[in-house]
Image 1 (cartoon, rainbow, N blue to C red):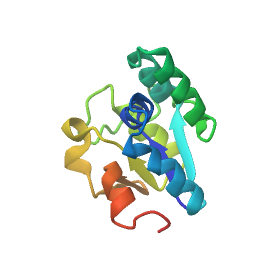
Image 2: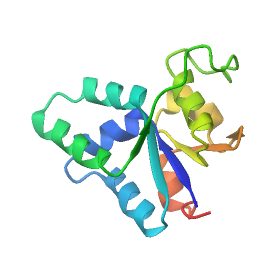
Image 3: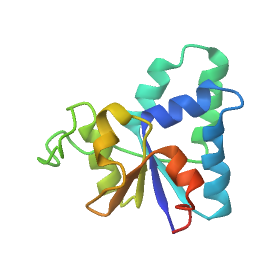
Image 4: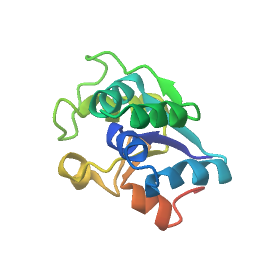
Length: 137
């Protein structure tokens, strides 16, 4: 069973557009009995960036079907894997929550890790999870 960790930009994008394609992640997860996971760190970043009340409400609706875990302490892992400081907690939390996938649209910071598995977590773009049949594997 997949344990899919959602980065803040995925949460933001799914809540931002009323008919956004990223909402398919929730349907695919349900269909494949995958667990959607995120962190308090990612949730707060998404909340901070959503300005419209309707978008904030949509985020809360989506989060009802996501397991939210605490981010590990700042000193939990010394390995940055080449990520900027602000993104290290995302990868660390995906690892400690035993995610099988980290879904992120942050090509700028995570792009060089797309398709790589770090400590059991496959890092991929949302389209790769949705379109390539990665769901359920």
